[in-house]
Length: 202
Image 1: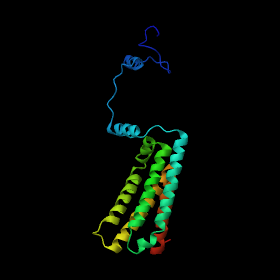
Image 2 (image 1 turned 135 degrees about the vertical axis):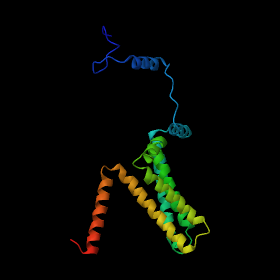
Image 3 (image 1 turned 120 degrees about the horizontal axis):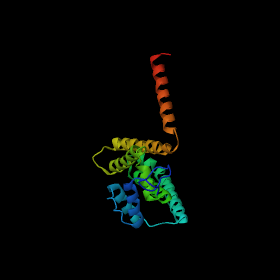
Image 4 (image 1 turned 30 degrees about the vertical axis):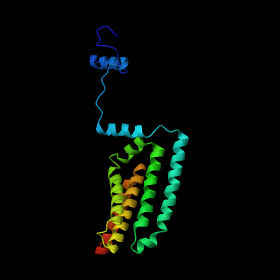
């Protein structure tokens, strides 16, 4: 303390306010009241309590195992494309969806449930995440719902899978700086060139 000052000095040489000093003192002695947790924080804590702490080797082992299973399921789904074309999409959808789910579980092993969920539902990725999960849901729904005609069913399933690929691509490039801006620029330029060709303008 300095004579005439309100309390201890901060790093900038200014006097620390009495309220801040008192709050720091309460935190130091354990008297600071805990703030109520938000719903998101409670969900994170519940998720982390379900998943035990894993070592680095266990995380890598879990990720590699899920990746191999996901790869085998994806290969199995592509071997059933003939059945999909013949109007029986259920085997293809089951294998393809299980492969995607195993890939998601593998990412949870690698990054941890809390960290991965924060990344997936970050404001820059939440729309891609939601579109991806919605496309998976509608893919399964169309495969098992009997009220859709056979030809329309196959077309809708192919469209949903295409949406899954686009959503996953958009999610992945969000980790690359300026990649989304570059993709948008290329797409816009391609549309402009196409319009110029159709209209015959220079």
